[in-house]
Length: 338
Length: 115
Image (cartoon, rainbow over all chains, first blue to last red; front, side, top):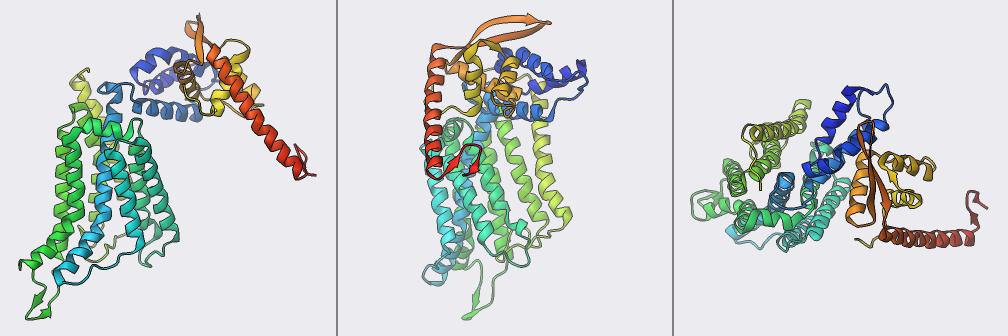
């Protein structure tokens, strides 16, 4: 049996939390080596996947809060609460956008497609479940929403100028939120980690995202933005919409950083590391857009191979770098114990 | 302890430990035998299930040995574990009996396809 193989298995076992390693590491190593052929130099793929999955799940478990082994789980649960609020805010945006203009021009509120109502109903229910600290309902709701987005993707008619994959991102986004809400302890853990102030900041970020589209119609009403001159419609400068989208995105980011700032430092670092890929994705989408930061017309992205690489590899790279930096910073400054 | 149905790995591990105490690698090999080569437990899965079964009080450590300078821990079924295995076996047998009965009603027999 090679020492190299043993070393590689030990590195995989190091992924487990300390208490689990203390209980099982030697024993597991014996089993892993007993199951390996004498000429094997690298861990078997199946064993590797099993160890990585099992160790990851173990680390997300919540034996007790505020210990090194629960920091990632606490951070993910907190990010799950924020993500649920932001998703509700995102689903409410079409309502405030169309509603704001209808009120401004004195028209009745326009009827939006049923899918919008369904999304709002789902995410409102998920947010209520989060606030009532029901992991099961919040996670089930988020997974159902992800399934709904998948069905919607399959049955809807994609605009001819966009490849179907360009419309697939809501499925991925919803699934990521569902994973965050499914972490052991889930919503209860997230709310406990954030405390009342953190939850309020998450709610503020969601509300900002939801109601920011009211700003441009409101500015029109008070005369700052001009759409009608001498009784004639003169159009609307699209830069106002871009400014709104950029400002609300930046303010949501600022609220997220504020929310993270009130978390315990180890959890804060991890929460920011988990948020970093989402921010990268958002920024990458703007880079490839012919109308950065939105606009009144649907954004057409430059779906070339380079942009796909940026959208897919960029967030993953940022996540890997963030995780590396978290561990590196904690190696330099010893981690505080609970 | 949870009262829901046992998952297949947990059921097979309890079955492996029903006859005699076994160590981790012994359990993997026995499960492979019991399942006619269908279920090959990975080490990560094995210890996740063993840990859960221990915390549920269904198995316990019988003894520890050092073999070739490595720890070898033998597990055995507890009384609660044996009861749980009996209950689960009865549940699965009821389901299997019901399935067999329905299949016979429509003229299908085990392993023979359509009659």
